[in-house]
Structure formats: structure tokens, C-alpha cells
Image 1 (tube, rainbow, N blue to C red):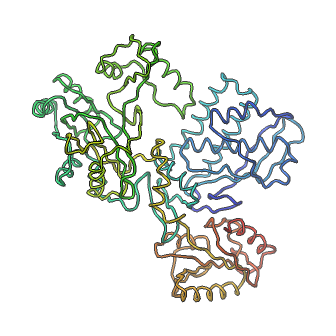
Image 2 (cartoon, rainbow, N blue to C red; image 1 turned 180 degrees about the vertical axis):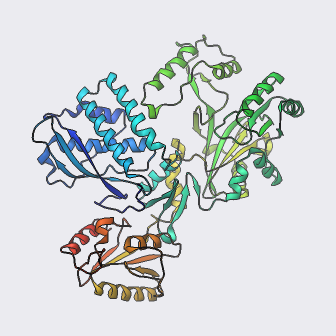
Image 3 (tube, helix red, strand yellow; image 1 turned 90 degrees about the vertical axis):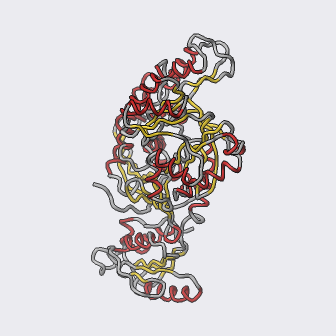
Length: 601
């Protein structure tokens, strides 16, 4: 069963749930091999223990081991592209009386709205088991390979299948977390960054300002090219063909070489380039037609493909997109270079492996085009492409070209994005020389990509702070004042709202029972309780600041709907039980203030 709304608790900066897990802690724990595995394989730096256990040292190595399990839990979930960036917090540890018996741990871990609770439990179970096996085996390589397969099959793949974040979403959310921008999962991989008037919505790298009509036009390469040409922008010459005979006629009409490709597929699927014979046209047609009913034959343009990334409506960076390759060293044959590359990939954990490329037909075709045989010894530094083009399926070599792009090429990239109504777009320009104007060397815009892969390479990652600065105002948060107490809290909060209105601070006010706009007019909301009322206000673009009246103990159970509070105002009266709304709850006010203070800036 999914949890509809999650709150901030235990001082974590992401919404949290509690989980339990057990493990058998040896009397003596040798962490050296375990920590080397954490660092070298999972790329985990051992952070200081975050625990509410007083004192943590009382449990000795059990706390340290439990903390490492939390680090592995986070690594598993991140490998599945779940955007959880804190390891969590150890809340309670019941140590075994004797070595070999089970220690029980209660911990808080970050979680996303709309994700089944079993997802966190699954990660905990697999992480605890694998961590203990690594410890017992002293990170024996023969054991590690089986454990990595277990992690991938039992946890990472099932969690990734939930689809709550794409390869584009994850790095953007990670950068947002680093800038303390609050984030909430709305469902289906859609995220809200920020609150109220500063809130923005995104999915993958598409944003709330992107045109759905433009996205539709970008879904077909022939529609894209037609729109580009109509706007006076350079586009490839092609023909849409319905059968093999039309493909052959189109190739003759366009002139060699040609490209045959599906009109509506991504990731360069089914694309055949460098076609210079009728036999190759037939083969290309068959491959493309197996993937799509819409096949294009296109006049091939000389040059390389460059991705010009437009973000927030302006050019941000450019990269050259070269095919995956091997580099010669003057001693190994081409075949050995390819085999060694494949062996290196196979040694990585499954979730970090690129697709293995061997001496298949595509490799041989690419080598033939370069005049290279597999038994040749490649010269030192000689780069040999293993595919005809870069693709998402096979990968490639990315190089920064931002500083050399001609301003006229930047101009048409931005014009193309505006033409399709896209704030974020990947403009693929094929040109012999990106430093020269497009109108001098026959360059064309090959594709306009809606929701481009953003953040998957070092060039893009370095630009993410710049993107977020232009996407979300400041850190996306709003001023939040909390008045806590009985009837006096509501009265003082209303007085503060009236004063703020006069001074220009237009604040919405809400308690668990009513909500007022800045003019003091009651706002009907289909929301129950204080938690849901605050969440509802955080989604409204007219909300500039919040005054929250806390009169019940509800947030002790739900957690907080916000992870930053500007001021706490202690008022007369005690908190009452949120279920009955009448009976005062012993020590609830003190506990609530302690919880609120953990989130005061």
C-alpha cells in the first residue's frame, strides 16, 4: 500500500519513514575490507554516524555496522534511480546479548510520496544480507560477484521498475538537494521543486513551461524537419517511404550517401548511416521497418553531430557526440583492444556496466569504414570507432564544444527551441565544423529533442547549478511562521497576518480547521487536517508566505509538511489530540517544539 503523503522527521532534509532490520554482529568486526568495498565498488564515502542512540559508543561496532548498512541501502536505491540523498538516521539499536545473535535496528530513511513502503523494506533486507556477507568473506572477489548479482536482481531492478525517476531526473534532483531546494514526488516521475509562488514542475528534463504541442511535433523526425523548414531553419532532406520500392526510389532521387531510419524512434534505434548501394538500402529499410511503420530515407550530411543544449530558453552548452571507441597503444591488436574493453566492463557491478561490444557485424562494418582490420596493431592514441554513430543504446564519447560554437549556430538552436515552445531542448546539429556558421557549410538541424538527457555527462553536470538558478527562484522556499498553542495561537497569528498585509507581506494563514487568504477571507479546501492544508497551499502559485497555527499533536504522527521554518511563536494553551480535538495531550507541546526547532533556519 502506498503512503499518499510523507512528512519531514528526525531532522532529515527529505521526507522520511521508519524501517526495521536485523543482523548478527560478530564480537570483533574488521571494517577494513568492508570499507574498501564500500568505497571502490559502491563509491561510498564513510560519513559520520547519524544516530539518536545515546551514546552510540555504548553499542560499539554494532552501531558502526548498522550505519554502513544504511549507507548500502541508500546506494541500492540510488542505483535504481530513486532520488534519496541522505543515508538516514539510526533511532534505536537493541544489541544482542551474545555474538551470533540478532541485533535489531530501528532507523529513519528518506522516502518518496507514492512509493510503496515495501520498497524501503526490500532495500533494507538485501542491504543487510549483502553487507554481512561482504564482511564475513573479507570482500573475497569470488564472493563479491555473486553478491553484486544478488543486489541487482533482488533489489535494484525491482526498485528501478517503479519508474519514479529517469536518468535525466536523478541528477537534476541531486543538484536541487545540494542547493536545499525542497522536492516532492507528485506521481509518475513528476516532481514539484519549491513551494507556492516559487514552485516549478518537472518530469525528466521537461518543465512546466514546455509546450505539449511542440513535444508532439518533436516525436516524429519528419514533422520536426517540416516545421524547421517552414521557419527558415536548416533541416535534412528526406522522404517518408511506405515500402521497400519507395525506399529504393527515394535513395536514387536524393543521391548517395543516404541514411535510413525510423521517423518516430529514439536512442538512434534502427538508424543506418553511410548507405551507398541499393543492397544497403534494402537492409536499412528492413531494420527500420521492423521498428516502425514510419521510415525515412534521408540525404546524409557530412560532418559530426553536436548536441546544443537549450535550458530555460537560452543556450547552455554544446557537446560533440562521437561513437564509442577504443584507443590504440602500439602493442595490442584491434581485436585485443575490443576484448580487453569488454572484459573491463564485465568486471563492474551489473548496474554500472555499459553494454558490451564485441566483434559483431556493426563493429566490423564500422572498422571497415575506417579501413581497419581486427588483426592490425593500432598506433598509440589512435581512436577507432566501434559504431557508426553515437547512440543511447551503445554509448559514445562526449567532448565539450561549448567554447567553439559559432554564435549563428547558437542562434538557430535557440530559435528552434522557441519554434517548438520548449524551454528545455536538445538541438542536434550536424556540421563539418561547429565553429563556422551553419549557412556557410551546409549544416542541418537533425533533431529537436523534447526532454533531452540532461546531467548524464560531466559537461552537463557542471551546468546543473546554473540551470537550477534560472529555473527555481533562490532555494524555492517561502517564509513560514508557526504559532503553537491553544486559542491564543490563532488570535496572535491572525493579528500577525493583518500587520503583514499592511507591510506588504501577503501571507496565507492556516490551522487544522480553517484557511484564510491574505485578506482574511476563508478558503474552502478539500483537505483534512493541518498537514494536508499546508501541502495544498504549497502547490498554489499565489501563495507568497505562510502562517501556520499548530493547535493539535497531528504533526507528531505525520511529520512536518515543510523542511524549513523561519520562526516559532510559543503561545498560551496546550496542544490537543488531533483525533478528538479536545483533550490536551501531556508533553505534546514540548515534543512538538523540539520537532519544529529541528527545522528552524
